[in-house]
Image (cartoon, rainbow, N blue to C red; front, side, top):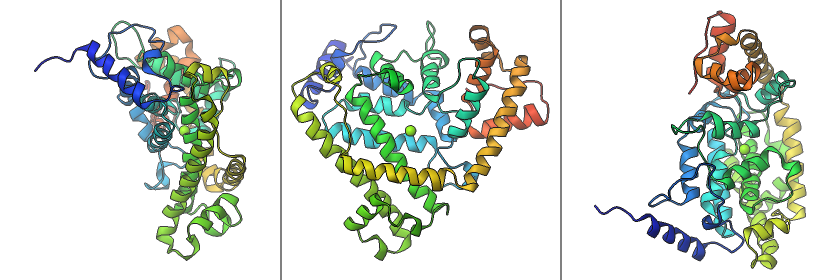
Length: 382
Ligand code: MG
């Protein structure tokens, strides 16, 4: 079989992008490249390669064992961090294709966006942030950067996945939104898809798990809008929930696409960089945005603070904190790889990184073995 010619391949995906993508999209040929230069791949563009590197990383696979909002002992129906990530990627690609943005870049950034979450979701993040407050703090967005630039091992000459500047800068923007005035349209799309996904699927999961009752949704403007497009009250209960979620997604996606298309029309002749400099912000219409904020406040009060979740979170926080104290007090009990990190980052940050990489189940197991049973040494999760 004849080998594909890399130069032909590059010309092919450049040509393909020039036909399919808008001028304001991030074109692969304009990429600033990688920290460690590489030859072009014979049949994949740079952002396709990034997507595949993230997909094949061990940190990505561990998302299947990390909770999104609800824990594994609450059932098998609800989203995990992994299924949430795939839902975000799916919505983001739909937006990207419709607005003629770079779908490969969007998918890579969507698969990356939650990869740095520690066990037990935001409660785990709060614990690590508190434990490390005198040692640089902790944020899942920054830990995602550490994972793909320092911790994941794929190459003999350097650590990390050697992702493109664009994918890393998108994640860096998530890590420090306050200091970033310019943002690629592609990362804005991932942010919007993330928010649309979790607002909708948290309603679904909370209803299914019995944390919410249907009557509590009455009067919420976005739900009332959904009822005006689909007669939800007259549909049998087993179909009502998926139909509500589908309609909530559809309303938000449709509005975001309509409004963003209008915003992009006057700048259709600008490049990706020029659109950033013009501070173009993709968004929903003000009316739907307000209704979405109301739904988010409702979820915060009625779901995220539900007593069943608070109880689960409190117990998980206690276990994670105890595990941190145990290992920070005896860093010699860290597995070998984490002891190597400690030489560069210090004991506390190495313990934090070791804990942040754990799945919920692995964290519980290590708590049992290291704290309750006093086993002398932990094991690596990679
Ligand atoms: Mg997310």
